[in-house]
Image (cartoon, rainbow, N blue to C red; front, side, top):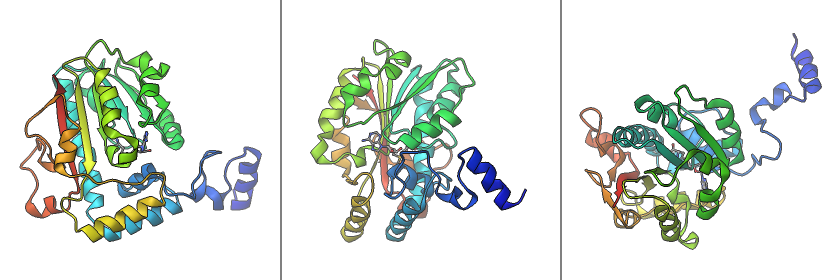
Length: 289
Ligand SMILES: C[S@@+](CC[C@H](N)C(=O)[O-])C[C@H]1O[C@@H](n2cnc3c(N)ncnc32)[C@H](O)[C@@H]1O
């Protein structure tokens, strides 16, 4: 088949032409604005990103090269923290800010420990949902659901049929807020958002959070990164250790508390000082009192 034949066939099926494949996105998806989910996919070496995401991603990498190691460390934290909670017997996970599926998704990690574990995924990026539905399947007896929702509207997330179908709020739930709270600015009242979600959960529930911080970055570099995200789908707000700790009000922190990602219960020896220097996010796990 020649490229022209392929394009004719593609036109008949309304598929993208060869020269459009790079930029193809489902109808209605704006690829001209850098999107946080697709920039993160780019940092992780994924393929679901477009020119605008890669350009903004490259600017961030230029400002803080550790963002690539931080993104990888964030996925590794997800694995260790979800495993910890599943081993503690929690069978249901509400994962808000799912991200584009990659290796070690929440349901895969949880169901490797508890095959009956259930996961409700919620994200506000329609492209995430399109890929999640297509790529995530469940091998265990557990169940997964996907829905579009915005963390800034926690009541709507809690009321959504897709979430209610999978999560029983009368039993402990693990709330995953991984690399999402830094996209919630002060104007969105993050304390209220967490309080609404916390009040829906019974004691013995968990909250996992990872969060960008400026604690290890020069102020002018932090300001430059904030400028890049101003033109993206969401602005970014780095927070200090104390500000992130305040989000865990009502929770007992699991040891070692809120630390830079690779320091949270590492599988092996833990990071070297050189590796740690690159990490720009804190992570923590709390158990609801
Ligand atoms: C950096 S990715 C993190 C993905 C995944 N949680 C992880 O840690 O690997 C952030 C995700 O949060 C989503 N997101 C950002 N703001 C959101 C909001 N207000 N409501 C729901 N999802 C949001 C983005 O679309 C993206 O998929």
